Image (spheres, helix red, strand yellow):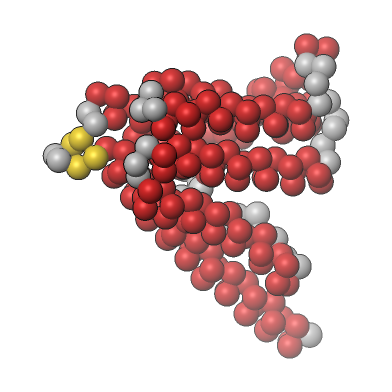
Length: 207
């Protein structure tokens, strides 16, 4: 929510660039999307090895690809339903791979809870469409993917200088905060879905 306007503004400029120079990008948008997962693998390794600056580099590269793959598809007029689906699946794989790096780093419980919260937050929205064939574009929630990425990057950056703050592990605190945000976000979406479904049932009854 907090970064949506900035994201859309950046994507608009990138789409225009791709449209002006299509020959510079001979690969398909889906191939471009897959690169985000490929870059998450060395990021996972770097997190597990406590090479946090290196992890930040690969996470930023992976996040940049996630930011612009849709721009490439629109610029090349290659948007598709499968492309949108594939992008969402790769996003989940990237999330899980990154948290697995923290798991290997010794933060098993925190990484597990953050992963579960991330998956549930992402699942709650499309599951509503299955329940009643509806899909709201604007969902009031915290812990969205961009916010989670910012938290991870901030935690890694702080941990390079201050592994502990006031006796508390910086990485551990970041993961607990991420877990809390994502589970709150999942609950928000459950509550919002309940309202949507009750409204849909009431509208059908009235008609």
